[in-house]
Length: 239
Length: 320
Image (cartoon, rainbow over all chains, first blue to last red):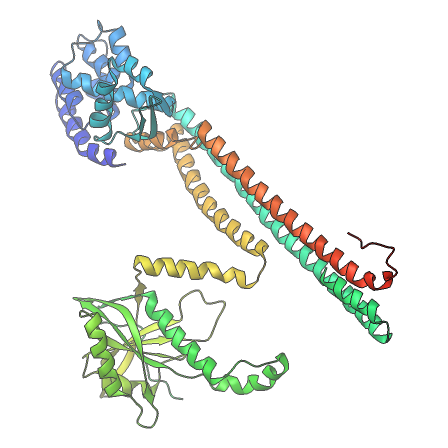
C-alpha cells in the first residue's frame, strides 16, 4: 500500500490548508489539491468542517467538484459539465485516473472498448500509453495488458474514497470470505481424518492377511510330503 | 562431575548469529562418531543387552567454529572438527593450524571465533580448552550441543557460552556465561533445512501420513488467514457502529483488498484447473489398472505352475 504512504503527507498538508481558510479561498485550494500528482484521496479534506460549510453557498460548485473527484467518473463530469467549474488539464488527467480505479472496482477484466469509451480516447496506442504511464507507473493499478484480446486484466487497484453505502457491502464481503474459509477449514479437517482412517484400515487389512497366511503355513508344515500344495500356498501369500 | 558455576546471562553486549550449517555439522560429527563407536545391533534382542552399556559411552566431540565479527555482531558461519587429546586435555594444535590455513585460503574473511563440543552442560575441563584457545581469539565462544533427544523441548538444544572474569569469593575467576543467539540463514541453507524438515513425517511411512501432514500445513495456514480476516471484519463492524473513528486511509486499503476477491474466477482458470484435475485422476486410474493387471498376471502364472504338473495327459490346455 505504497500509495497510501505517499499520500499521507500530502493529505495532512491539504487538510491544514483547508482548515485554515474559509469560503471562496477554499476554491483555489481545491483546484490545487485535485491537480496534485500524488493525491488521490479526498475524503479527509471533505471531512473538514470548513468544507462542509460550503454546502448551499455560492461556492458550492467547488464542493461539488471535490465530491466529483472523490466519488465520480469522467462520464459524470461530461454529462453534467454545467454544474462543475472548468477543469484544468491536470485535473482532467486525475479524473481519468480515478475513472480507471472505479471501473476496476466492478470488473477484473476491462475491455479496451469500454476503457476507450469511458476515457474518451480514440486509439489503442493512446489508451495503452495512458494506462502504462499514468496509472501503472503512478502505482495506482497493477495488471496485465492483453493487446490481442484487447483486455486489461487488473491484479491490484488502489482504493478510492468510500461512498457512504460501501462500508456495508464491504462488511458483507468480509463475512462471506470468513464463512468460506471456515467451511474450508472444516472440510480439510475431515479430509485429514479420512486419510488417517483409510491408512489405519489398510494396515489392519494387511496385518489380517499376514496372520492368515502364517496360520495356513503352520497348518501345512505339519503335513509333510504334500510338496505341491505347500508351494501353492507359499506363492499365494505373495499374490 | 562438578559443573562450573555459570551466570544466567552475558553482559558483553555482543549479538550472536548462528547459521544452521554449524548445527548440522556438529550433529553430523557427533552422530558419525557415536555410530562408529557402537555399531547398530543385528537383532532386537541384543540391543537390550547392550543398551545399558551403550548409554554410558556418549562420546564427546570437539571442533572449531569460524565466522566473522563485525563490530558488536558475531556471525558464525561454519565449523570444522578437531582431534581431542585426552591425555593432555587439549586440542591438537598443529592440526588446528593446518585447518585454519586451509580455510583461510577459501574464506579469507573468516576467523576462528571459538570452539564447540557436545554434552548436556559445560564442564570444568572445558575451561582448559577455552583458555588454550584464548591466544587465537581473545574472547572465544563455546558452542554446546546437547545430543539428548527431548521431544517436549521446543528450542534448539544449542547454547553459546562466553567467558567472563567474575570475582567470586574474592578470587577473580573465568566462568562461562550463557548468551542468547539468533539463527540466521542464507537462501541455500533455508532450502535445505526446509527439505530436511519435510522428510521427517515419511519415516512413519505411508502416503496417507504424508498427505495428512501436507493437509495439516495447509490447514494451519488457512487458520492464520482466517484469524486475520476476522480482525478486519471486527474492525469494520466497529467502525460502522461508530465505536471507532473512521480512518479513511485504512478503509481505502481494505476496499482495494476486497476488490481482489473473488481471486480466481476467470474461465481460463476453470478450464486449466479442470484439465489438470482430470489428468491426475486419469493417471491414478491408469496406475491402478496396471497394478491390477500385473497382479492378475502373477496369479495366473502361479496357478499354471501349481496345477500344470497334474495335467501331463496333454488334453487340457493351460488356464490362459
